[in-house]
Structures are given as C-alpha cells and as structure tokens.
Length: 122
Image (cartoon, rainbow, N blue to C red; front, top):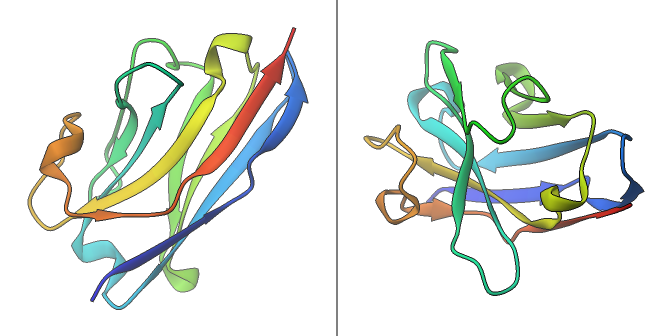
C-alpha cells in the first residue's frame, strides 16, 4: 500500500524559509497526483499546492509566488519549498496522494502522511 512520511517542519520567524519533504513508499511516485494541504487549529483542511504526474503544478492564492511544489522521482520524494513565511502560514502540513484526484478537495485523496508542524512567529 501507499505510505507517505513527512518531515522538515519547525518554528521560524516571519520572512524565513522552510523546505518540507514527503517520502513516498509502496508505489511508483510519478503515477500519482501529489498534493500539500494544511490545517490550522479550528480551521478546515485547505489545499496548498498540487502537482500531477507531468509536473504541472497549481497553488492556493494565499501561497502563490511564495511556495513551490516539486518532486524528485529518483528519491520518491515530494517537496514544498516555502519562502517569505507569514504567521498565517502556521499550520499542520500534510502530504497527500491519489490515483485520480488532482484538485484541491482534501476528501478526494486516499493516501495521507502524518503531518508536520510549521509555526511562524511575527
């Protein structure tokens, strides 16, 4: 089965950068649509970025121009490079994958990582 393991979260100050990683196991990485979601306390789980098997990416308006989603097929790893972090970016970040879904609805994804916490201080 598909297993996703996230890492790279931490606590930073506003304006700094972080790079999140999601290692994928149990499948051919580029056969899936991969995505990053985030969820802050008391908030719904929202799309951050999505990348399909061709490398085409899309982003939530709130992170566009600051975050970059990418993948390294040789390492079976998905990345989220986050620059210019803001306090409102504080959330638990989740990696997700699916054979069919490539949109921004969390309930369409069948495979999830455990999450990695990102905290941005002003």
